[in-house]
Image 1 (cartoon, rainbow, N blue to C red):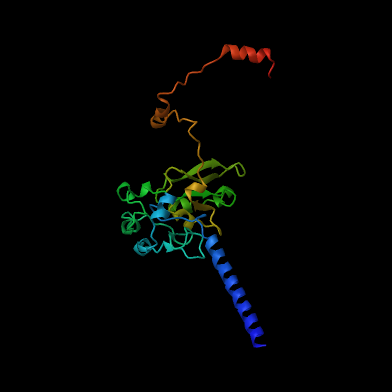
Image 2: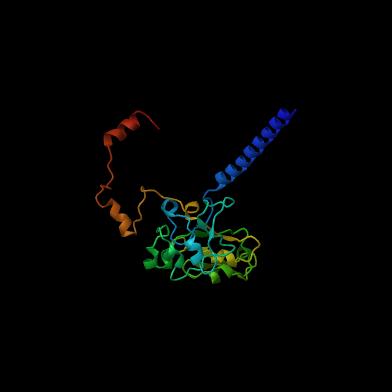
Length: 246
């Protein structure tokens, strides 16, 4: 009888251990980099994750308590710094203490020379369906909060056809200027922010190397040594027509 009780006790302990391990592993597997905002200087994801030593010095250096270290329950990689713009955005300190204190250069120190406008933490995206400015209500909260006002975030005036009297003041984001600080998201007056900052890789597309910006001298230089003249094979065209390959 004693051996039987010991057997069931050991089975129960094993089941508890397996269940606990399963829950622990599930938390680890859920810890990824989906939709998290990183500190200034961490725009190169692979570079940042390979160099970050999880020391937390950047978190301590932030005077606004913006940065947090991710735990197993967070979506960011465990122990790495991140922030939530709706809670505490990045206030773009001119001296960038978080980058200064990073001992491994995971937060790229080149930004200390280039300035805050070189940062690329994310891009603000406006949801026109929930933005009250698109309803005709005059609201410029996100616009006024933007530290790069009239450059990263502008107001586009558009005639309100519904009332025929008022103008829409519509927030518009310049993706090339926006640094992703999140101050606009914090300032948004809607219950859930109608303007959100997302990581750049989730927002920006890629045209590819097939297209050239004719107005950009640097981009146009790529085709300097290429033969861009059109070549027509008269025989091939004739054969195509004769074979009726329409």
